[in-house]
Image (cartoon, rainbow, N blue to C red; front, top):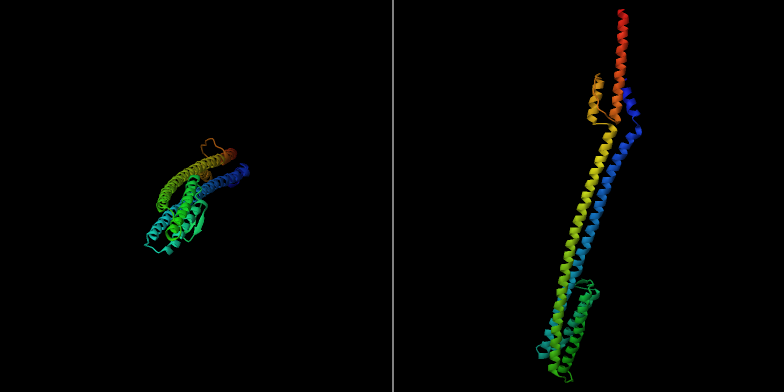
Length: 297
């Protein structure tokens, strides 16, 4: 009889409401999973952005800096060899190496401006208008430097008779201008690397802030969802499950003298069940009293 009444009151409470608990639990877990997925996606996006900027600094800018150093080295070497050829400490056939060094210098200038690849690595375009303008000036000076070197070589070993001192002054003057401009480009690239490094730091800080906000937002949403689900389940159950278990144990042991507090859901259904059992018990006591009284009469 007790089991029947418990089952009747339980299912009378509404099977669909019980299903709602499962739905809410499922939605709660799904919302937490979605938040975790979104946080993960944001982390991946920010990591990729940081990687791209780091790649620009490490893979693109550093080789350009090396290319400027290579330009300075090749032109300086060419200048020294040329002077040794002119004074006679080097064979005049070495002039081909000088022209080759100057050609290499021009190639590196073009590689910094437009990109290029050789045995020493891959060079990406600098993509900076100020640096490009300075490099074009360097290129023009290198071309002029080679023209004057050719004139000096022909004047020294050929049939032409030109003003040696004037050519020497122009040669040295253009070389000095070249070194100055190369140093300026080197400084510009160094500044660019520093600025890009700061951009990396800014991006990293922004990524950290984004992930922290996403995490905090996820925690808040998870807490709200957990509280909402817990509240709704408690509302539908009507109380703590342990309290309901104690009451059912008392009823099962035959103790119907129970004080109830206002409740809803399953707890309220159990209260109705106990009240019906109390009424049945009272009615049985009345009938037993009448039977006993009739027997005694």
